[in-house]
Length: 344
Image 1: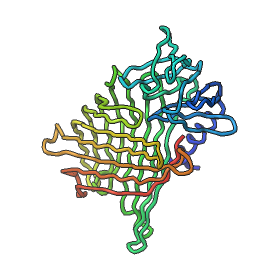
Image 2 (image 1 turned 60 degrees about the vertical axis):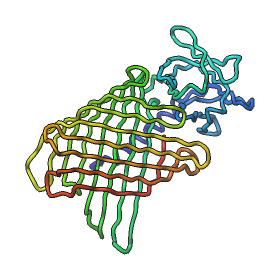
Image 3 (image 1 turned 90 degrees about the vertical axis):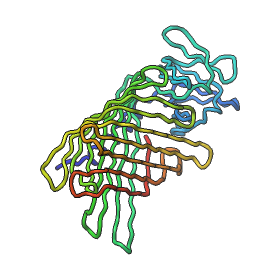
Image 4 (image 1 turned 180 degrees about the vertical axis):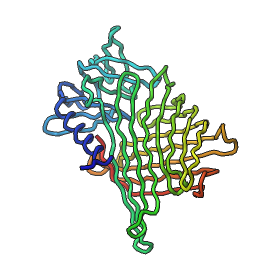
């Protein structure tokens, strides 16, 4: 039986869930500001929301502003608003909303409000992975045109770094015939250097029939600067260089180019009802080896939670531009899809 990429991704998705359940150790404690004590497994905290797993209740989400203290003897990576990174466990203090971080050099007393992210440094490979899976579709009876989309990402975290595998596939059908497709897959690595500075490496492949691109392979190296990063949003800018190899439709000419790369990325999370997530990014690539040519892309994905924070419904919109496509393709391509998402 021939396995497709969708079958492989589904297999990984199921395996991650099984492994995560098998290695959960519910020995952490959260002290709520109202006096309640929650015992379970502290999974992570990001954008002002702590994810916590409890026996009989599954995974629940607690707003950071409602947490008075945390106790855990596990090791965590803790990122602060000022860009500092701590590695250690948690111990409550006698001061409301202040906790101790117990690290290799001693203990530090910090405000909970100053924490941006908390991720456990677990030894098991599968327990370090989280991700998001989305499917979407649109159809117009009058034009007999339909679109489908399948996208997602898997994140793997280690000390001061993370690796992300992401994919996005969009297909347009007219009657029963595939009339256009856009596919992207990327493997990205980021490592924190100092405070709000990071470095990144991206290896990607893409195809876009509308723009006349049969296959484009990219390797990008860039520096990243967090402009602001707090409990509800992150905005950062990246700049660097990209080496690309492009094969167009309707031609055997393969081109190799060097381009600049500038990107703006904004991630927003609003916990108050309705719970809203917004992911947006802009990329601009001016060609160095082909002066006058440039490419640009814009992606926007707002989502609203349904049932729980794990299930969301939203809209995915993309816009791509190439000032000088190599074959007889169009200069622009854009599309939108209604999506249903599930987060690990």
